[in-house]
Length: 199
Ligand SMILES: Cc1cc2nc3c(=O)[nH]c(=O)nc-3n(C[C@H](O)[C@H](O)[C@H](O)COP(=O)(O)O)c2cc1C
Image 1 (cartoon, helix red, strand yellow):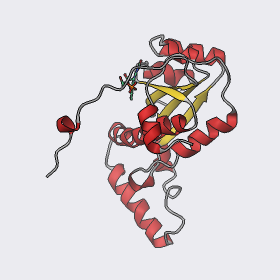
Image 2: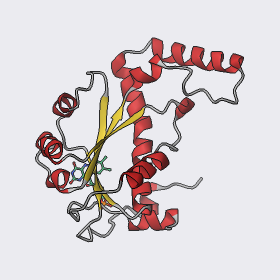
Image 3: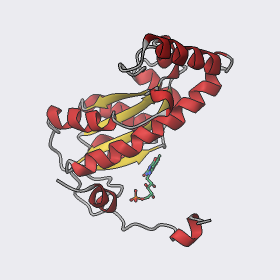
Image 4: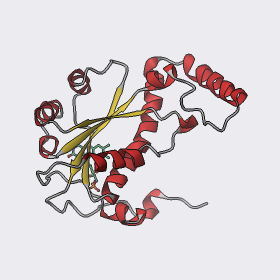
């Protein structure tokens, strides 16, 4: 078992994979860990489509600027953000330890906050939450011995059409997943001086 630090240090984008299926139990465990990501009000707008069928992967590759890692990876996870699904089920994410009164207050706050926003605005808010789950997904996969490559290079309209997703959902990312056959590039990152201020 890797520590979180090891998973962070070892993760890099990998675009070439061993051609062997990923056990369903591993896929489910990676997504279970991913689902533990935090989000504002615990809304959890993330949804995941796990694509393993070879034909579907090739169709997805065509919708993803023909990026080879899509067809090459044994699994590709489409990370979807669906704020309208969240709003249609507002009591679902209220913590079971909350009283009924607290739950009512939470639902009221959610309805007040998002009811006045356009589908576009609240969709944009939700996708920021969904990216938290993307970070968890990349690290959970790494810890379980899998490599990944996150992708934003795709045509969202084509991806939605492929999986018959409604127009309002956002595709946050595609994630190729498998055991890598290449080392990937060493990390190249800003120094702390460049990105952090201590006051
Ligand atoms: C949200 C996101 C989208 C990305 N989109 C692509 C992509 O479409 N194609 C690609 O080859 N790499 C993509 N990358 C990989 C980045 O280029 C890569 O993470 C970055 O250069 C740092 O390298 P590393 O992941 O190996 O540390 C993406 C990464 C992230 C996090």
